[in-house]
Image: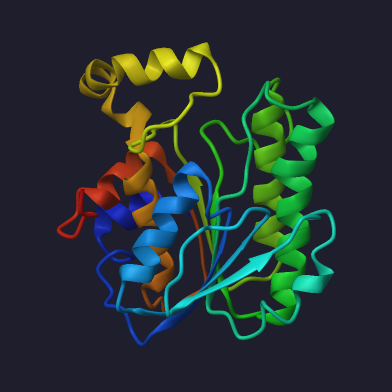
Length: 247
């Protein structure tokens, strides 16, 4: 089932949050992960946040536990930190062209699959919110390496045994916070973003809105097993609901 019907019917996004959740955020120093962390720490429905990444966050918070981990090809040492978690928000990734094809596959697919393996062993009932990408192809037939590797990760997550898996496929993610753009294409898109959003609203999403949606969906209580795919238009529908993120 895709998210389109769920969002349109209002069944999945109108269920109230029940109890406080223990969240894991992977990649909290990145563009989307940073906003996911901020939203989770500020949310009263979140009891604790375990941040897992290679770099220190440079912040402190009573809810926050920071775990530094360098080798995502082997996440076995994270088993204890992942015990008793209610959900993971996985934002680790890289840009096409910034690394070799082998590194792109490792970061995009292999690291995700390895982390999911350890998380499921430690917290089999956790929900999983995954930052995928527009065009992700689980069939492996796409000519684009990024699409194939994101699809590979999606396919593995759906088979991992988690009760709820949410696959987010944003198109262009607008970086709300100033940053050094990875290449000319991103610099151009940032410059024309106001016009691009007006002309092609379903091809863009703000980083903070995407982060909010990825966290919000795992905080909501679902009565049935769910495997939902959120395309860019679905993410926009979520953030345009009565409770969008501030900012």
